[in-house]
Image (tube, rainbow, N blue to C red; front, side, top):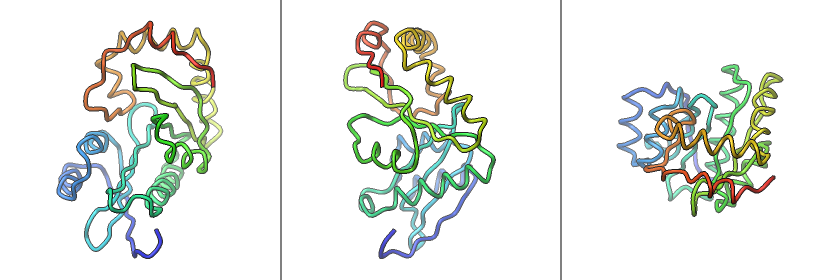
Length: 196
């Protein structure tokens, strides 16, 4: 991050760190995400946490937040890069992400970092997300092949039924940080399928 002297640290996502994030006014949605993450990369500026990144859920889903006053200054990129390096050191084979299709900055950032869009899901009206993956080791190709299934009409039908059936379990599976996930409409998901 330009013009700022930052300290980056990797920490276990324990109760003390969560309280520190809450004290530093990280959003409630991301606090929920970080509570279920295995570890976090924190950006400190003069003893204040100004950003955090973590990975969690069964599908190694990444999440990043920079405080509003530090957005657009390169902090998100720095957090993402540090998170990717830490994931490599910890032996991860891949990292996935869910990106709101309206978030052009995040789409550009993920592409720049090497993430590939695997499929898009129109979960409900006004909730459309790209599912992305970054392969870190050859074993990560297995997950890439699995995710490609959902970039087909039959794959999306299967996913729609799984989402409907496993709605209460799904947010924990992918470490989703949405406040309230609407009830998925199988018809809406299938009708709005778009191959990437």
